[in-house]
Image (cartoon, rainbow, N blue to C red):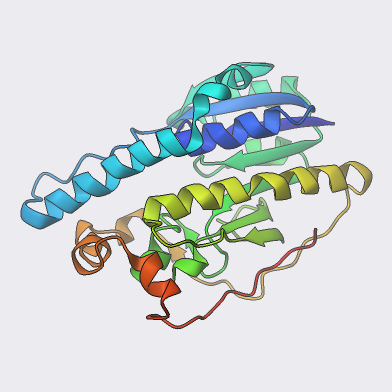
Length: 267
Protein backbone atom coordinates (compact mmCIF):
# COMPACT_ATOMS: atom_id res chain seq x y z
CA UNK A 1 0.00 0.00 0.00
CA UNK A 2 1.16 3.50 -0.84
CA UNK A 3 0.56 6.32 1.65
CA UNK A 4 0.76 10.09 1.28
CA UNK A 5 1.39 12.05 4.48
CA UNK A 6 0.70 15.79 4.43
CA UNK A 7 1.95 17.19 7.71
CA UNK A 8 3.17 20.28 9.51
CA UNK A 9 6.72 20.99 10.68
CA UNK A 10 6.31 21.10 14.47
CA UNK A 11 7.74 18.22 16.53
CA UNK A 12 4.33 16.59 17.02
CA UNK A 13 3.75 16.52 13.26
CA UNK A 14 7.21 15.17 12.48
CA UNK A 15 6.83 12.50 15.17
CA UNK A 16 3.67 11.08 13.62
CA UNK A 17 5.10 11.28 10.10
CA UNK A 18 8.23 9.41 11.15
CA UNK A 19 6.31 6.66 12.94
CA UNK A 20 3.99 6.08 9.99
CA UNK A 21 6.96 6.09 7.61
CA UNK A 22 8.53 3.28 9.65
CA UNK A 23 5.60 0.87 9.25
CA UNK A 24 6.86 -0.47 5.94
CA UNK A 25 4.49 1.10 3.41
CA UNK A 26 5.71 3.09 0.44
CA UNK A 27 5.45 6.70 1.61
CA UNK A 28 5.38 10.12 -0.03
CA UNK A 29 5.45 13.22 2.18
CA UNK A 30 4.42 16.83 1.84
CA UNK A 31 5.86 18.86 4.70
CA UNK A 32 4.20 22.22 5.32
CA UNK A 33 6.55 24.65 7.04
CA UNK A 34 4.58 26.14 9.91
CA UNK A 35 5.05 29.26 12.04
CA UNK A 36 7.50 29.11 14.96
CA UNK A 37 6.32 26.83 17.75
CA UNK A 38 7.08 29.69 20.17
CA UNK A 39 4.45 32.33 19.48
CA UNK A 40 5.31 36.01 19.80
CA UNK A 41 3.26 37.76 22.50
CA UNK A 42 0.98 40.62 21.43
CA UNK A 43 2.74 44.00 21.56
CA UNK A 44 0.36 45.46 24.16
CA UNK A 45 0.69 42.51 26.56
CA UNK A 46 2.33 43.17 29.93
CA UNK A 47 2.55 41.97 33.50
CA UNK A 48 1.29 38.55 34.46
CA UNK A 49 -0.37 37.92 31.10
CA UNK A 50 2.92 38.51 29.29
CA UNK A 51 4.70 36.18 31.71
CA UNK A 52 2.08 33.46 31.27
CA UNK A 53 2.19 33.76 27.49
CA UNK A 54 5.98 33.36 27.38
CA UNK A 55 5.81 30.48 29.85
CA UNK A 56 3.08 28.64 27.98
CA UNK A 57 4.67 28.64 24.54
CA UNK A 58 8.27 28.24 25.70
CA UNK A 59 7.29 25.29 27.89
CA UNK A 60 5.45 23.76 24.94
CA UNK A 61 8.55 23.94 22.73
CA UNK A 62 10.79 22.44 25.42
CA UNK A 63 8.29 19.71 26.28
CA UNK A 64 7.77 18.67 22.66
CA UNK A 65 11.49 18.58 21.87
CA UNK A 66 12.05 16.34 24.88
CA UNK A 67 8.83 14.34 24.68
CA UNK A 68 9.03 13.39 21.01
CA UNK A 69 12.82 12.88 20.91
CA UNK A 70 13.01 13.19 17.14
CA UNK A 71 16.74 12.52 16.95
CA UNK A 72 16.09 8.79 16.66
CA UNK A 73 13.52 9.32 13.89
CA UNK A 74 15.18 12.09 11.89
CA UNK A 75 16.47 9.79 9.14
CA UNK A 76 12.96 8.56 8.39
CA UNK A 77 11.69 12.08 7.79
CA UNK A 78 13.91 12.54 4.76
CA UNK A 79 13.29 9.16 3.15
CA UNK A 80 11.13 8.56 0.09
CA UNK A 81 9.52 11.26 -2.01
CA UNK A 82 9.45 14.49 -0.02
CA UNK A 83 8.12 17.92 -0.93
CA UNK A 84 8.69 20.84 1.46
CA UNK A 85 6.39 23.80 0.99
CA UNK A 86 5.47 27.03 2.75
CA UNK A 87 2.06 27.29 4.37
CA UNK A 88 0.73 29.46 1.52
CA UNK A 89 1.71 26.80 -1.03
CA UNK A 90 -0.54 24.09 0.42
CA UNK A 91 -3.13 24.39 -2.36
CA UNK A 92 -0.67 25.53 -5.02
CA UNK A 93 0.08 24.06 -8.43
CA UNK A 94 3.37 22.78 -6.99
CA UNK A 95 1.51 20.65 -4.45
CA UNK A 96 -1.09 19.55 -6.99
CA UNK A 97 1.67 18.42 -9.34
CA UNK A 98 3.37 16.41 -6.58
CA UNK A 99 0.11 14.64 -5.70
CA UNK A 100 -0.56 13.83 -9.36
CA UNK A 101 2.93 12.37 -9.75
CA UNK A 102 2.68 10.27 -6.57
CA UNK A 103 -0.47 8.18 -6.82
CA UNK A 104 -1.29 6.68 -3.42
CA UNK A 105 -3.95 4.44 -1.88
CA UNK A 106 -4.37 6.42 1.30
CA UNK A 107 -3.58 9.86 2.69
CA UNK A 108 -3.02 11.08 6.25
CA UNK A 109 -3.21 14.79 7.03
CA UNK A 110 -1.90 16.25 10.27
CA UNK A 111 -1.15 19.83 11.23
CA UNK A 112 -1.77 21.68 7.97
CA UNK A 113 -4.16 24.40 6.89
CA UNK A 114 -7.45 23.80 5.10
CA UNK A 115 -7.13 21.78 1.89
CA UNK A 116 -9.26 23.22 -0.90
CA UNK A 117 -10.27 22.27 -4.41
CA UNK A 118 -8.91 21.14 -6.78
CA UNK A 119 -6.33 19.52 -4.47
CA UNK A 120 -9.02 17.98 -2.27
CA UNK A 121 -10.53 15.97 -5.13
CA UNK A 122 -7.09 14.65 -6.16
CA UNK A 123 -6.53 12.94 -2.81
CA UNK A 124 -7.47 9.26 -2.35
CA UNK A 125 -11.00 8.42 -1.21
CA UNK A 126 -9.44 7.15 2.00
CA UNK A 127 -7.99 10.45 3.19
CA UNK A 128 -7.94 10.95 6.95
CA UNK A 129 -7.25 13.84 9.26
CA UNK A 130 -5.51 13.30 12.58
CA UNK A 131 -7.33 15.91 14.62
CA UNK A 132 -5.98 17.01 17.99
CA UNK A 133 -9.27 17.21 19.83
CA UNK A 134 -12.39 15.17 20.44
CA UNK A 135 -14.96 15.98 17.80
CA UNK A 136 -17.63 17.33 17.97
CA UNK A 137 -16.90 18.82 21.41
CA UNK A 138 -13.61 20.37 20.35
CA UNK A 139 -13.26 21.15 16.65
CA UNK A 140 -11.09 23.79 15.00
CA UNK A 141 -8.07 25.40 16.67
CA UNK A 142 -6.34 24.95 20.07
CA UNK A 143 -8.54 21.94 20.78
CA UNK A 144 -6.14 20.45 23.33
CA UNK A 145 -6.09 23.77 25.19
CA UNK A 146 -9.83 24.33 25.65
CA UNK A 147 -10.48 21.12 27.62
CA UNK A 148 -8.06 22.43 30.24
CA UNK A 149 -9.67 25.84 30.27
CA UNK A 150 -13.04 24.23 30.92
CA UNK A 151 -11.51 22.00 33.62
CA UNK A 152 -12.11 18.72 31.78
CA UNK A 153 -8.64 17.44 30.83
CA UNK A 154 -10.18 14.01 30.24
CA UNK A 155 -11.50 15.46 26.95
CA UNK A 156 -7.99 16.21 25.64
CA UNK A 157 -7.80 13.49 23.00
CA UNK A 158 -7.50 12.57 19.34
CA UNK A 159 -10.04 12.04 16.56
CA UNK A 160 -9.21 10.21 13.32
CA UNK A 161 -11.79 11.15 10.71
CA UNK A 162 -12.32 11.33 6.97
CA UNK A 163 -11.53 14.62 5.26
CA UNK A 164 -14.41 16.65 3.85
CA UNK A 165 -14.76 20.24 2.68
CA UNK A 166 -15.87 21.21 6.20
CA UNK A 167 -13.42 21.48 9.13
CA UNK A 168 -13.24 18.35 11.31
CA UNK A 169 -16.63 17.12 10.10
CA UNK A 170 -16.04 13.82 8.27
CA UNK A 171 -16.89 10.28 9.31
CA UNK A 172 -15.18 9.37 12.60
CA UNK A 173 -13.11 6.18 12.63
CA UNK A 174 -11.44 6.32 16.02
CA UNK A 175 -11.12 8.48 19.13
CA UNK A 176 -8.66 8.04 21.95
CA UNK A 177 -7.60 9.87 25.09
CA UNK A 178 -4.36 9.30 27.00
CA UNK A 179 -4.21 7.93 30.52
CA UNK A 180 -3.99 10.90 32.87
CA UNK A 181 -1.36 10.73 35.60
CA UNK A 182 -0.51 12.88 38.59
CA UNK A 183 2.09 15.50 37.80
CA UNK A 184 1.11 15.99 34.16
CA UNK A 185 0.80 19.56 32.91
CA UNK A 186 -1.10 20.75 29.89
CA UNK A 187 1.74 20.05 27.44
CA UNK A 188 2.46 16.61 28.90
CA UNK A 189 -1.12 15.58 28.15
CA UNK A 190 -0.90 16.94 24.60
CA UNK A 191 2.25 14.90 23.96
CA UNK A 192 0.66 11.78 25.46
CA UNK A 193 -2.43 12.31 23.30
CA UNK A 194 -0.37 12.46 20.11
CA UNK A 195 1.53 9.31 21.07
CA UNK A 196 -1.71 7.40 21.68
CA UNK A 197 -2.66 7.94 18.02
CA UNK A 198 0.12 5.83 16.53
CA UNK A 199 -1.20 2.32 17.24
CA UNK A 200 -4.77 3.15 16.14
CA UNK A 201 -3.41 4.62 12.91
CA UNK A 202 -1.39 1.46 12.27
CA UNK A 203 -4.44 -0.70 12.96
CA UNK A 204 -6.68 1.42 10.71
CA UNK A 205 -4.24 1.25 7.81
CA UNK A 206 -3.89 -2.52 8.23
CA UNK A 207 -7.67 -2.96 8.16
CA UNK A 208 -8.01 -0.75 5.09
CA UNK A 209 -5.57 -2.93 3.15
CA UNK A 210 -8.17 -5.72 3.18
CA UNK A 211 -11.30 -3.62 3.55
CA UNK A 212 -10.84 -0.27 1.78
CA UNK A 213 -14.61 0.40 1.95
CA UNK A 214 -14.63 0.48 5.75
CA UNK A 215 -17.17 3.04 6.96
CA UNK A 216 -16.90 5.34 9.94
CA UNK A 217 -19.51 6.95 12.17
CA UNK A 218 -21.36 9.99 10.88
CA UNK A 219 -21.11 12.80 13.47
CA UNK A 220 -24.43 13.17 15.30
CA UNK A 221 -23.77 16.79 16.23
CA UNK A 222 -21.98 19.70 14.59
CA UNK A 223 -20.53 20.70 17.97
CA UNK A 224 -18.49 23.88 18.14
CA UNK A 225 -15.65 25.10 15.97
CA UNK A 226 -13.00 26.95 17.99
CA UNK A 227 -11.26 29.67 16.02
CA UNK A 228 -7.72 30.95 16.50
CA UNK A 229 -9.10 34.36 17.51
CA UNK A 230 -11.13 32.75 20.32
CA UNK A 231 -7.91 32.34 22.31
CA UNK A 232 -6.76 35.32 24.34
CA UNK A 233 -3.69 35.48 26.61
CA UNK A 234 -6.03 36.18 29.52
CA UNK A 235 -7.28 32.61 29.26
CA UNK A 236 -3.90 31.44 30.54
CA UNK A 237 -4.65 32.94 33.95
CA UNK A 238 -6.88 29.99 34.75
CA UNK A 239 -4.20 27.48 33.75
CA UNK A 240 -1.25 29.07 35.56
CA UNK A 241 -2.40 31.69 38.08
CA UNK A 242 -5.44 29.87 39.43
CA UNK A 243 -4.28 26.26 39.06
CA UNK A 244 -0.47 26.41 38.67
CA UNK A 245 -0.74 23.98 35.74
CA UNK A 246 -2.07 21.30 38.09
CA UNK A 247 -5.49 20.80 36.50
CA UNK A 248 -4.83 17.09 35.92
CA UNK A 249 -3.99 16.57 39.60
CA UNK A 250 -7.18 18.34 40.64
CA UNK A 251 -9.24 16.27 38.19
CA UNK A 252 -7.73 13.03 39.47
CA UNK A 253 -8.54 14.11 43.05
CA UNK A 254 -12.17 14.52 42.01
CA UNK A 255 -12.37 18.32 42.15
CA UNK A 256 -14.08 18.59 38.76
CA UNK A 257 -16.33 15.53 38.67
CA UNK A 258 -15.92 12.80 36.06
CA UNK A 259 -17.86 13.60 32.90
CA UNK A 260 -16.00 11.06 30.76
CA UNK A 261 -16.35 11.30 26.95
CA UNK A 262 -18.16 8.60 24.97
CA UNK A 263 -15.43 7.65 22.52
CA UNK A 264 -16.14 6.37 19.00
CA UNK A 265 -14.24 3.63 17.16
CA UNK A 266 -14.78 1.23 14.27
CA UNK A 267 -11.43 -0.49 14.79
